[in-house]
Length: 308
Ligand code: DHB
View 1 (cartoon, rainbow, N blue to C red):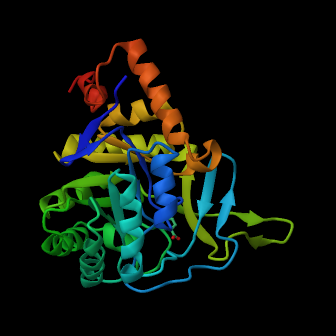
View 2 (view 1 turned 90 degrees about the horizontal axis):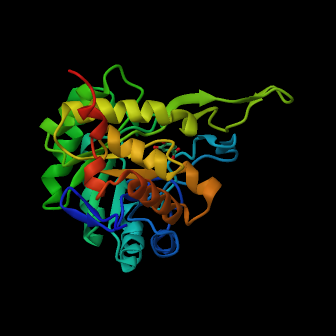
């Protein structure tokens, strides 16, 4: 079955998207995720104004299908990353540039720089749960979230701008409404949950060098589905549903909650680089079994079954 679909005017050969932060550090690896992995689109690791080395080890706690991480937003800086995006674009699937800043103007400055590589979309990371001064502090209140979107939209021209939201707020739908009002073309939901802490009892010390990190993987899927479900009820702009998607049935669930496409991150670690092709096959088998004709038929379907 054909799984082609569309997201904010961008054509996708299938609805699976490499989520930011996983394998997105270079143009060559992004290209591989598209060509060997089968992803419908790929997202870069978040890019900032200046080069950052990130935190020392340990940066990841692997707990099977659950993961805690605090990389410290390592990246070579926006100017250096332009060439990586150009290389990624050789794979001929949409390339999404994830950006972060340390001020409203900083976000716009990074957007301006990465736009030189003509990414297909900009995703604003305003939701890293543990990076002090760079992340969720911008996406946790309606006013600041709106200001960041407005500043990026001012420089982005025709390139669609998505805001990646944190689940760690009282009302994600209020933030979603604020970014829509500010002109966002779409929303990615959700970033990692938390932050969380894991302590090694043998050494009586936190495992992560940063102590706290963002939680991802299968445990956060019901939270992600709830967030997407609430956001879909609140806004008209499209949603990339991200959080704990491992299988084609998980992808179907995310689409039914209201996502137009599905981000995949932690599952890449457990199901290899071709997790995208595997999920597409599983989704396609499910759609055939249930007689669904296209990805768009699934988007928001769970809302139609609820009595208001
Ligand atoms: C990092 C950034 C994130 O947005 C996230 O969800 C987890 C980790 C980081 O680079 O530390």
